[in-house]
Length: 371
Ligand code: ZN
Image (cartoon, rainbow, N blue to C red; front, side, top):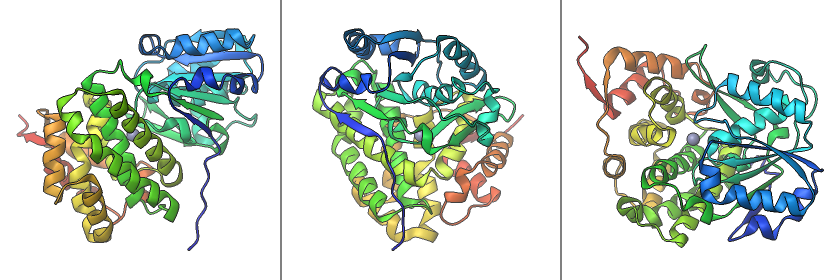
């Protein structure tokens, strides 16, 4: 047995954790640059809690609330300029995966006057500023990972950089903040988290500890899957989903993702399919592919999720996502080729070729004959 396990993030979980642990904010200086999206941080109540705590601690703050979904390299560059002008001592990221991932990039740009595309080659010397993360969706896991995933229009896909220095210093997980999410967002993000657990469990970089967490995350998902179908979530259902997402994030930090994410990026980039939904549409067929190389692990996954077969998982995803998108054959060939260029593919058991990925896409999505 040989492995390394590393999550340096201090995790606060539970009702009222931002206000209860306000001391955590003053550990990181006197100036906070808040990174968030347009609306949801406000609607969730998380922004009000954070601002109240900063004011109480005498911490000056400025807010950048222009992070859209799937943040672009240009968006973080703009925010980086604003951050350098404000000269913060910490960043507070509030939102789903997009503001959290963007904040990690901005934390580096705030102290390194470089163009944002340099981030991908590790082209920054000064240590990124501390990031404190407040997720308001249950799916990203970004609050406990060293990854920042941004959209690169020049490469027509998402690109990520990983650096242990961008692990958030602290994460505050309060399920009340996820209560304003719609059923659709809740389902999509829950499936993203499930996908992190499943892919992390199958990843060539899986470790004995990450495997324990991954299986537990899948079991927690299974416990609320019927509620995901109906959409009437109690606070404790929300808490289960947030906890499952957190565990999956810790897994992801060790293992990275695999072919599911690599392929899903194209659905999001070219067809605007929400990230978690994209993963859900591809998950079952990726699992079917993984059977040849990791049959034992596939059986464990199916048991943990509470389905009998890969077909059963596909049926569950279909009921949750009600997919009706159609694709052309040429699109699928391009998606397969683009996925081969991602770093995630190297983690995939069975070493899929472009041909294998194309078959996974064909089996997962509805294809119409091209004109
Ligand atoms: Zn994901």
